[in-house]
Image (tube, rainbow, N blue to C red; front, side, top):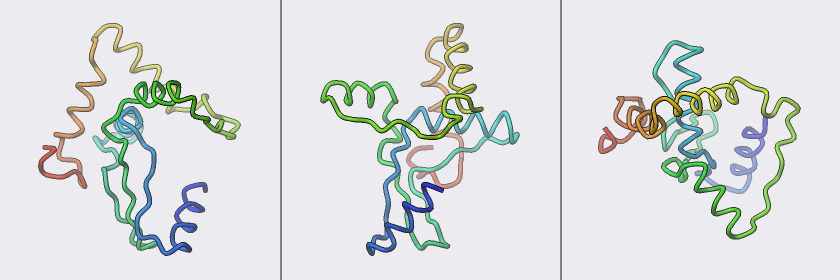
Length: 131
């Protein structure tokens, strides 16, 4: 619902591109959610065309780990809006985040390897140079 309103506001302003703040950890989490719950190796791409809106979505933070973004926010004392969703932190996405932390205790560096698998895994929408 939030993205729909954001996309519509962009169109109303005459924009043809909108930037989402998805970061590297979001990409990895989405891939694991897709693998576990849909049975397919898939995640979103750096650039997506929304044909019904005639709008491009770009994700400029896709290569940046969440920890780096939090560090930047802390260093410059940037305000962050709390997610108003009542189930925030109690979702399958949160489960996957914890699963990755657990796996990383046994196999250090797992996030880097999962990210590498995504950018080289022939997922539609990824540029050839990533593969």
